[in-house]
Image (cartoon, rainbow, N blue to C red; front, side, top):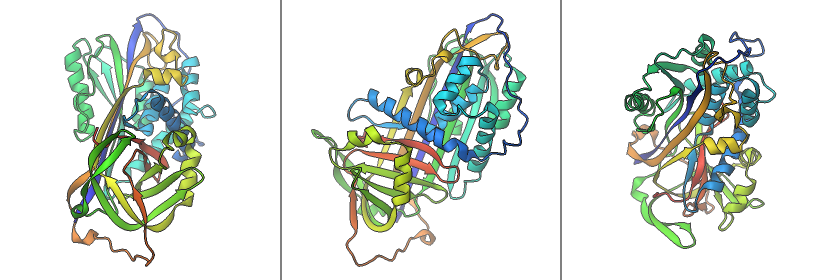
Length: 411
């Protein structure tokens, strides 16, 4: 019997470009000492991060052509923007926090929540690999404020290294090497065409590799049609497994939902809209739906037909972030006085890439064979032969690690 391993990797980049080299007045920023309120559970980040995740989805979806996949890491993007906010002041900071949904929290409270989250995720390693981290590539000769660097290292586990942006090809190679090493070579050549006037690049990465708690048997995998839309179909390797799954048919919201647990604290939730109902589901879906479905799931016998697939999605996020309310950061009005008091900075580019593959990756030891007692009644069938939504959920931190829409598993 073959196990199924899902490998997901992401690198989200924020590039801060130098706008003008003139003096910038200093704004006070919160100290990096721990507040007593701040041994705060990372769960306070979960609701705003989920709202931001769905705001991103709706923006991406409006710009994505029919039949194209959407896939990204909400946690990665939120983390990168929270890290950027540690160096922001004035309206620039307000816009970042308002868009992220952190308006009622201090920067220190958010920093400490992320510190707690990273600590928790680093202990979620049994039977899975989950690496969430950050890096800062700083221009040789540019010295950000010590407090900014200290906060990035302390709260965001950031690795800081110097690069020579005046040699863009060499700088890109160094940054790409860092990203590839953190994503097990799943993401290479992420950075191209670096501006030689850059001051720094903020890097966030999320890398996940997990094995299904209930592996599929590769002997049952067959060629099958997947209907990308009414007029397009593609051939996929369709896996099959009959077993006991947490499953729910939401008749009111025209969806079937199944939870596929990984070994560890992580699960893949698959949401299959009824035929012709994808747009309706996408128009209304939010974090309350995820909670509702999670609460309604019941252990049932299900025959699951699921395609093997490997997809990659890339996006430039600047226009999306501006449309969601983060505008100042990209203009000469940007206030990043918490990064440098002497040099004015603005965000030049925000790039994001996510990779997801679901495939057979070798034999499972006999000890991992799953025996399930099946009831005599006929199982429900869930056939993933048309576009579906996917969420990879980390349960200890209540985080959406990755999410998207699989419109074409062969793309």
